[in-house]
Image (cartoon, rainbow, N blue to C red; front, top):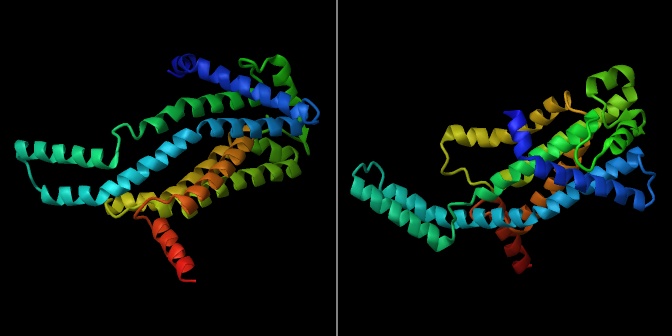
Amino acid sequence: MPDVLSALLSPVTHSVAAVLAATHDAAGAVGLSPGSAGAWLLAVLLLVVAVRTVLLPVTVHQVRSSHARAHAAPQLRELRRRYAGIRDLEQLTAMRTEQKAIHAEHGVSGWSLAPALLQLPLFYALYRVVSDLTAGHSVGALDAGLVASASAASLAGLHLTSHLGATLASNPLAGVVLVTAALGAALLSLLSQRWFVLPMTDVADLPEGMATVQRLMPWLGAVGVLAAAAFVPAGLIAYWLFNNAWTFAQQGLVWRFAPTPGSPAAARREARALEGAVS
């Protein structure tokens, strides 16, 4: 199955590899020594910037979809209340008709999750490219020469191919740097969820068990990053750090300027606007 998946997503993987090769060239163009650790770290950073910039329209669509669902939520709650306990087929059909009308009124799309699903092949390709590069495997435009360059690049004795356990044992200073990067990636993931995502999530309609899981998700995500960091190469940890920093900034902007209607974040924004109007 993994081989089939790799073959299906090969065009996406090769496209990402081409972008990473181009960002490495760009790092050299700004004065960094080609093949240096700084050049490769900047290349990974620019890769994150390029990919997340391409995905901005998807982000905007998701924000608009969450707003549409929030605007429709009160009517949908009332609809469920009116039809609670109904088992009659004719009435259930009428309920579905009303539900579709409410969705149409507020612009709720049945394909609202499609953009998120479309991101999965890209994220898989990113993982494969960075993983293959740091493992010493050539892929697409990242030929043997570039792979050897990435493998040889070193910062304080830390290579893109370094793994946490072996690095801590052989070079404690480099190990501390890698642990710090992993902690930074985990902390950014936690704070993004705790500060920005949860305050924009309305859990009123969720069962208590699901609401509890929703509140635990930030911690589970952070623990997942730390657990994975023990097994993946340093290049992937660097990618996670840069990517999570982008996510933190992006979610902060959404939380500040376009919170989901009806959420605690939206109430905070309205209170802040009211205070500004009074003063």
